[in-house]
Length: 143
Image (cartoon, rainbow, N blue to C red; front, top):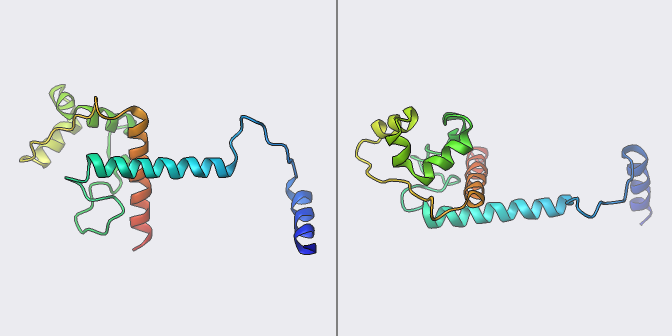
C-alpha cells in the first residue's frame, strides 16, 4: 500500500496530476474499447464480404501479399480511393482510372466487380480498413 502511494506521489509530482476528466473527453480505456470494436467490426465485415476471395490480412498464407503495403501502393488519398474502388470498381475502370485499369491488366481473368455501394457504409469501410491495417501489422510482426 505504501509503495503504491509513494509511486502515485512521485508520478503526480513529475508528470502532473490533473485528476479532472472533462465529461466529453474520452478516456484511454474508452478509446481502446472503441478501437477493439472497430477491429472486431472490420473483421466481421471482412469475413462476410471479402473472405470468399481474399485471405485474412493476418493469415500466414504464402500468397497473402494483396494487403502488404496496400495503402502505400494505392493512389492518394488511399482510403478515399479504396472506398471508391470497393463501392464500384467497374465505374472506376470505365472512367479511365489508370490504377484500376492496371489492376485489370494484372488480373486479366478476374471478372469479379467490387460493388458494395449499397452494402457498406463509409463507417463500415473505415472499420474494414482498420482491420486490414492491424491484420497486416500482426502478420509482419509475427515473422
